[in-house]
Every structure is written in structure tokens, then in C-alpha cells.
Figure 1: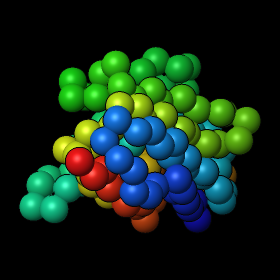
Figure 2: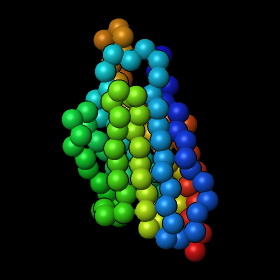
Figure 3: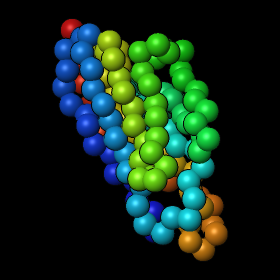
Figure 4: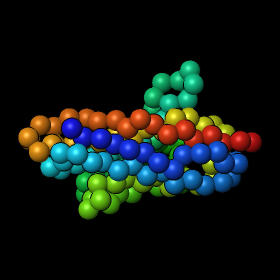
Length: 120
């Protein structure tokens, strides 16, 4: 079993900042890519940012220059630093990880989500 637990969401005014964290735990042999997705009411879940085990990053155009994804491989943790937040960033943010477990089985896992609300 592998669990992803997010933290750091909350309510912030437009222009403010938040930092999300997601820690993976359980029977982990290795973690490949880690990513953050978000889903606003009535919208599909969308990729916000992703990072490979080697540190290569990818961002949605809507967050480039404002959000930064990083990871600590020793802690099996991925972070999302969000600056210059806008009301349109309001959504539930989900952590995602591509994991090979102790039985060498590779699966994709999701966290439970954390709410980010940006007021205007």
C-alpha cells in the first residue's frame, strides 16, 4: 500500500502565496514522476505541474512564472509553491505519483486533495 497525504491548502487573498506539500508513504521502492493536478467545480481535473525523479519540470501555461514544483527524494515529498495567486486558481489540488512498490509493481496513486481558495 502507498499513501499520498497533502497539506498546506487554505484561503488566501488574491496576490498571496501558499505552499502545498505531499508526502508519499508505504511500501515504496522508487517514485518516478510526481505531479499536482487541480479540479475546480464543474471543470475537469487538469495538470498544474509535474516533476521527474531527475528534477525535470513541466507547468501548465496558466501557472508558469507563478508556481514552482520541487521534490525531496529522500523524504518522498513533492511541493508546490504558489505565488501571485488569482481567484481562478481556486480548486481542489491533488497530488499524483507514479510509484514502484516493494513488490516491483508500478502503479499511479492519488492523494485525497486539499482545497485552495483565493478571494478577490
